[in-house]
Image 1 (cartoon, one colour):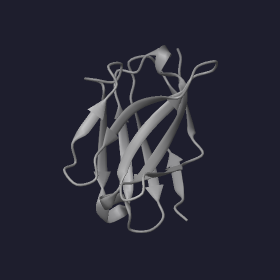
Image 2 (cartoon, one colour; image 1 turned 60 degrees about the horizontal axis):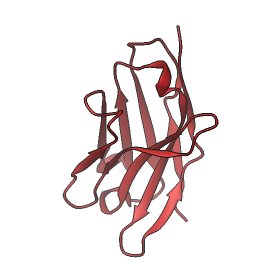
Image 3 (cartoon, helix red, strand yellow; image 1 turned 135 degrees about the horizontal axis):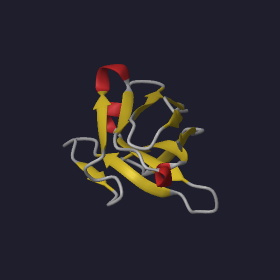
Length: 118
């Protein structure tokens, strides 16, 4: 069973930065599709950024382009989301998702809260 643990959330001021981390159990990050999602109060969960398993190609939501960067450290089985130029509308619970491409099975972390407020 894959376990994902997010960390790095907290309170940031508008224009500030945070870096989220997602640590996975086992040596599986390098062969899985990793993604960051977020869910704001009263809204549906949405994709923020994802990185593919083999090529390492990345995908970003329009709201994240130019501000957020997803990266992966295979040696540490960890995926990061660097968030810069934060806005109040970035306030949400951020979730890490791992998808094993051979069976399209998804694993989710429990989430970490990001609050952007002055």
